[in-house]
Length: 513
Image (cartoon, rainbow, N blue to C red; front, side, top):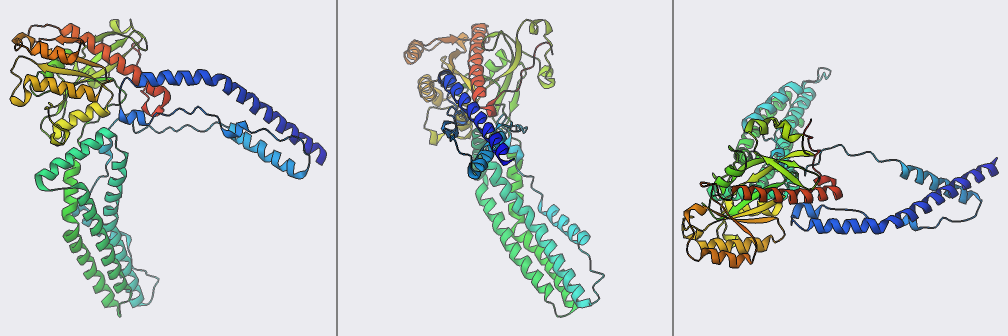
């Protein structure tokens, strides 16, 4: 019987070794093609520099070292049998499919600032604590000794009060630390800019407020333990009850004194942070960049939804105008047509151009974003609005439309023609691989003498579009260029989705759905 068992086990081990050897040869045979595909994919990837997405891209190509190990031959003793059994069991376990993670990845959208923990007002925290202590703590009717019963009731009440006041403070501090670490890079910049603007206004610094709340929690915890100990060691039942009442009121007063102010501050800051617009990371977009007053908003309205929404940020009254373009794709990489949707179609998620939609593979709602104006100056001199524009280019999957006004009417001296050209040189040097188009806006107002030559010298042969919204000059050409750039961005997003599921776009809605 033992001999039969040993032979069965050895046959299973040999069969496992053969399968492993065959799998290894198959992997080695396929590896050159896989590596080549990955190399090509990296080349596609490099067409857009994007810090957050690139850092998360992974594709395991190497096989496990266990596959390279040769199975041991021979042997029929008990030790060999047990080793073979263990090996066969391990191989069986390894071959089982692992359950898929069904959680929606946090990186598909921004919006992490909306996940910040909800902070209760100081009054609500105190009232909830009073109610909890009254409802949850009862005198022990089974305890016959009045002093022991009062001691126990007083100590448990003080413990409940301490927890009721300290736990919300702990949750605020820990919740903020956790969520701030998980933020998308673009949102980290937004949070920093919001905090910086608030600091300029009244000296409020987020980390300082969190530290103060944590220190208040520690002081309340120490005080609560002291009052609990006093109630537990009271000489008489009356003293235990008096200690409990005095300690409870003193804890509420201490909370108002130490924590209330800072809790109110964090609530004010949270209102600003939680209203930050969420930006989709899986949708192709074009961001308009340029100096102030060069006509970016007019271009957004001309080539996208006529009444674009405005994303307002808490640190500035100047938001980012967001328009939409319904793009029709001939195939996975080729744009074929575009239609400007109505706002009711955007909000409902339904598109009514059935005849046009049925002619193409699928349709996708893409974004065109205006951005706050940039000035030609160093990064450490930029204000919050300029930093927002730079963050959008650095961290969001966008192509760039750089807009210039060469008519001489772009605004103050900080937006002179020379400054605009110099700013273009600087921004393009910082993002050399982004899909890019230069646009000379307000062409109907004429060009300052020498401005065209100065621009063409910087462009070094690169094409640009002369645009007049007023006279409808260059609008169709610009729309074609926007389509081209959206197509390039989509190719990169698809490539990233192929190697990293965290950047995957959701399935596209087919036109006939």
